[in-house]
Amino acid sequence: MLVTKETPTSPTSPGHVLAVLRAEGPLTRLELQERVGLSRVTLVERLDLLRRLGLVRQAGHRESSGGRRAEMLEVNDTGRTALVADLGQSHATLAVVDLRGTVFARDDHRLAVRHSPQEVVPMLLDAGKRLLERTGRADTLCAMALSVPGQIDHERGVTVAPPTMPDWNGTPLRRPFAEVFGVPVLLENDANALTLGDYYAMGRPDATLVGVKVGTGIGTGVVISGRIHRGESGSAGEIGHMRIEGSEQQCSCGRRGCVAASASGQALTRILRSTGVRTIADVVRRVDEGRGDAVRAAAEAGRLVGTVLATMVTIINPRYVRVGGAIGVLPPFLEALRRTVEANAHASALRSLDIEPSQLGENGAFVGLAGLVADEMLSPATVDALAAALPQS
Ligand SMILES: [Zn+2]
Image (cartoon, rainbow, N blue to C red):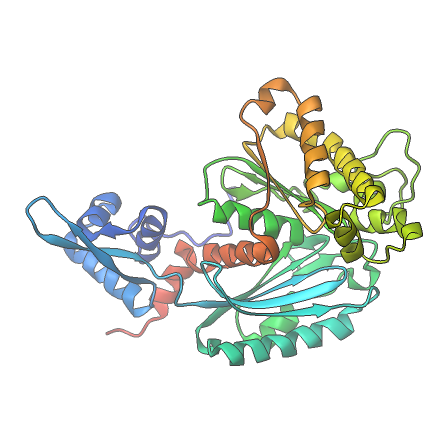
């Protein structure tokens, strides 16, 4: 039996018309009519519904051959608002964005190392309400999205937290936010959110992209032909817990010899402790200042991550690798990573490979989360349900 969770939508439904416009717009009405294969009258009806939902708008004119100016249409992805939050092991950042990822306001909180969900969730709820008030966009809020370290149990809406955040294991994250904000709540792994941010910012290429995030821990996201690949239990691409031969360093996951135990931000903080380093920000500052011990440690970390990334590149054969996170974008780390991948991955996988730092900086996860919200809220099934609920005009 074929089991599908998606509501079947007609290929000519309002949601489908919007999907075509989203993928190929801006388009004139005639171009859109040709793409979706609807009569002029029916298309006008569909567009009227989409306008009433605030989902399409005019996008200037195109000169046609006869000197007539044809009105162009595009998806209105700036009229709706999402509340997005990036939760890390030592920070929580919230932002109010539109579905294109434009950030209207953000709010940064530093967290104590052993923060519990009982403290952080109410704080995020409060901060979210205040941000929405400040931006005046509360009445266009359509969804919330949250990125967290560790894996997500998407069915149950809970997090399978990393061992360094034991209190978060099994925490229901969807429910408290859905209750307060009254909108759907999406959850995503933090490295996946960052990878999706790069993917959307690149204009959604029909290509395979691997995103590597090296901050406190090490995470990877894999986008295969436009879809994030999460794996059976959401742990696809956990290269931080691949083993380095010969290493016995204790890892936070309970095993020994993982890459993360020697090459994560947390590991670098430990390695450089005798030089006065206490935080990841200290590591970054010392590398920026060109201190020899910090630069060497960052380069060694890049080499170690590059070793496992080379294996991943050989297996997946991506077109793009984007490296982000506070440690990942440090030049000595990135140069050593690139050199190691080039020395170890299969030659044919290297031929079209493009390794660059993530360009999105601090807003990377927000762009990814906004794109996830857009994919969900502008999907044919969601749009058709909204259209069906409109009062008859
Ligand atoms: Zn480990």
